[in-house]
Length: 424
Image (tube, rainbow, N blue to C red; front, side, top):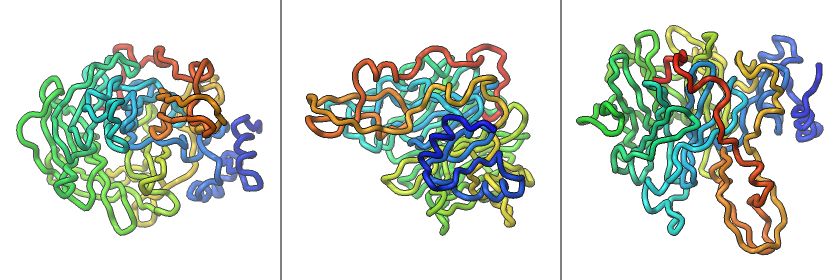
């Protein structure tokens, strides 16, 4: 079997360690290996039809994603950096490329994000959700100090409408829109400053304001990371909460959006190994398979890489990862790349998402660059002064590395697309 350049690079990174290539293992060994954390330096597509988690080793906080036709679109938090809400595209849930940002002017959120204040480090754009409804792509997110915001576009490449303030407030997080079969829109979100109560609001017809008083549909320790889905006539409310083992993914299921619900834990965590996979998007592939794309990261100072978990439906519940003896899922580290992808395009030919921040010596004057390449919000604004190490790229080389703003591959903007029912 031919070893790709990327795999050779990982061999060099691992050194004397063992490079895990599941495609070369017998089925029983591969199944056991999928539960073991991979050697350092291995990630993403392996070039043999398999992948290793994380699929992207950058900072992809508060991930959400959908499928429209044969294309997948994801978003990630960008906090105080601009442009806001990074938008990414994939054909197979493993290989992703950056399309741009949904918010071109973060000062519409509030003056504290302006260059003369820059007073929203770690705040600003928090967890959002992306949905496809009525022929448009809709993004909702919140800022913990400024409230809820939304924008929409006919294509994930834009143009995105100027940001709309849905509600000026504070103390909320993790909103997600949902449109029911009758066209009525809703927004589910957590009031974390009120004991993490999860509220359900109605949306106005244009989706730009909230209607009436909300209904509290759930409350548990640290309950947040909300997503709403309708599958086979039942409503599924995905969220996370804090248990003794760590922050875990849970799900409410019922015949009404406001309950009553049955509740089930979807996966276990091992904080020291898997770093709590706990916020992401549930998607169905065109061939009917299901996956969960999630960030994981524990603590204030580590990034949140992106991983892909298979989903197994057990008695009407989407169990994440490998189903254990207790019926609850566990983290997996390897698997088969979902059907799809770009025929004939080698992995190494895909436009790269930045996954490192090389240090270069500098003796030049103090400069400041806002890097337009996501994923790592904490790596997008770097300073260099005098003889300090350079954290930014400048000049023609940097321009060549910025993302292509042209149309996305695939037919995501054409009419008549069959969308994943979970995009609503």
